[in-house]
Image 1 (spheres, rainbow, N blue to C red):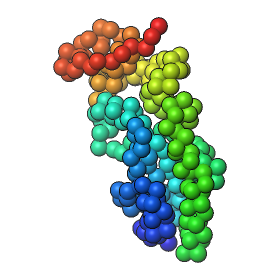
Image 2: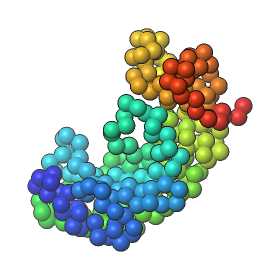
Image 3: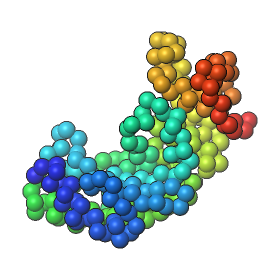
Length: 226
């Protein structure tokens, strides 16, 4: 089966269920739902290259407003869709970072897979999304590799030292290439994000002030408490 057929069948099989739960289809096999202080997203996607023609996954996450409010800091990524900060793989027990794939090798296999996907969404996936409304649960589920998202999540949950560690890791990812290749290459259009982090952590004052003057950008960022 083709990828187009996969998405078409997914729209037919699980679209009505998700729409009944308040989701809106935004493109083939992808839905969003406005939620308390944020929004939910569910998307069917073909598997990695080794499985792309035979298996698919279902990605899902919740996006609190404090996460999406900072998207403008990523100038070089503004045309790209945001990733999945939690989960993102739907499984029979909720969502995890460990991949879960369903077969679409034949129309029969796909029909069976989509029936199971609907069941997993109803019994585990949607309740998992609901649980992420609690900032403490979201912070516990957020992908630690996504250091900036993790910093925002832990700060919102009141986990200040965890937030500091995550923001500091994000700052380190800028400083290492800056030291090796120079500021223009190290920041690559993420100057506003650097300013945000420097204000949040109370570091790199001289570079931050210079960048703020160059950008005419003076954000009101509350520093982390000491």
